[in-house]
Image (cartoon, chains in turn red, cyan):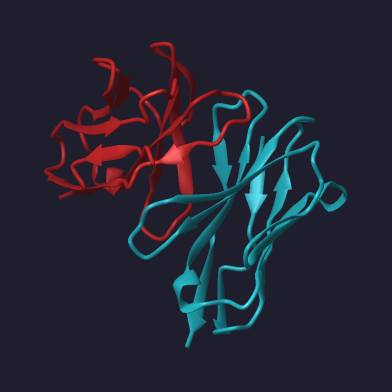
Length: 114
Length: 114
């Protein structure tokens, strides 16, 4: 069964450093998303992406964040200058269609900012 | 703004007991979609079910069943004859009409003891 994959599974970085989290969505899916989950808390929406454009973003997704689909298979989330509060599990998700379709999640990347 | 409330933060049951996880939502959309996801101790988010706002039929899948009541804005999840492997955090989520953002509830941690 096709699945979303994410690398790395765990990333440790120093405050102020840039990180790139990588995702490979399900191959025929057209809509891509990033969510984050601070330890023990709820899952929060960050951004949705379709047709090489951001279609929706939350207040969390400020100028420090960016997303890109650099090729036909990868979808990346970049944090330019990490802060301690960026420590969280970051989930990538994809869906075949937009409205109403199920979003399938990857296993997550745990980001630890020291 | 959308909101999902899972009032039960933690539930503990003994194996073979039935358990119901509550979910109440708020939205101004007339068309929307509701989901349940399971997050086992390994951390991934596993899709369980999707319902649209026009379909109020209850659904059963093996030991799982879902009760969608539009009149009370609730989408409750029942596990019959619970098993230790059901131990996880369960999230209810609401997809907006534009279909590009999931709003999650705070999750219910279910512990099934042998």
